[in-house]
Amino acid sequence: MKKCKKNLAVALDKRRRITMSTLLWILLATIINSLIGLMGVFSLWIKYETLNKILIYLVAFSAGALLGGAFFHLLDESFKHLTVMTSFLITITGFILFFIIEGYFHWHRCKCRPQPFTYLILIGDSIHNFIDGMIIAATFFINPTLGIVTTLMILGHEAPQEIGLFGTLVYGGYKKRKAMLYSFIVQATCILGGIAGYLASTKAEVFSYYLIPFAAGGFIYIAASDLIPEIHKMHKRNFEMTIFSLLFLLIGLSFMIAIKLVFE
Image 1 (cartoon, rainbow, N blue to C red):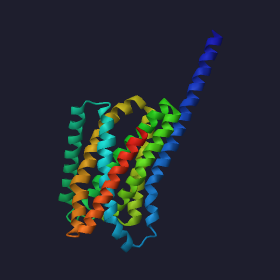
Image 2 (image 1 turned 180 degrees about the horizontal axis):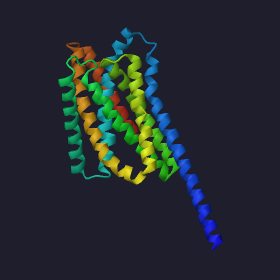
Image 3 (image 1 turned 90 degrees about the vertical axis):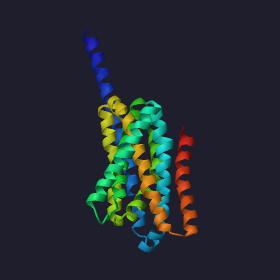
Image 4 (image 1 turned 135 degrees about the vertical axis):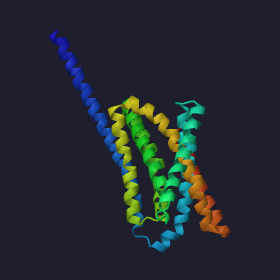
């Protein structure tokens, strides 16, 4: 009897050590992912005139990355866990809710500086990063190697997206330092997602199934209703700028597709 109790105690102690080790891996992975939000620091030494010239192309890149992430990552992932009809209904719900949120900011912020779409981007990216944290936690629970691979995949698509996010925030009216701070805070929500996934991995994973298409709807709305029209406004009748912006949009879209194909 004593031997059985001793074996059980040893097994529980081993389980506890494995669980704590998993938590440390999750925290390390999500903290590294959060640091991606500081990529805008490289722009602090760039003159405003120079930054303004490339902002429109960063906005175009961001639009392409948002569309690529929504269709080829978020929606594709949701189809693995939800029916197509359910995924589309939740996506439309996200699209409509973001429309309502933007309408609120338009009604209550007459000067619109920062512009309303910047708030939507921060909200949508927070949801996206929270989901990333839960996914990281879930994969580390399954296998540490799988967790590391998943983290690298997330870093791969977050880096270019965060560059575009920073440029879009500056274009939308934020000072560079404030845009960098908000980018970091939003990116750090993945830590909260990681902790939530650690505390209740199975329930959090089920919850993320519904958040994924919701975030996709928000990203599609931002790209199609806000960013692309802003690109047209900046171009006016400059055909050369239109071509280059289209190129950067396609680069952002292609990068997301490439990430999907490489790590599929």
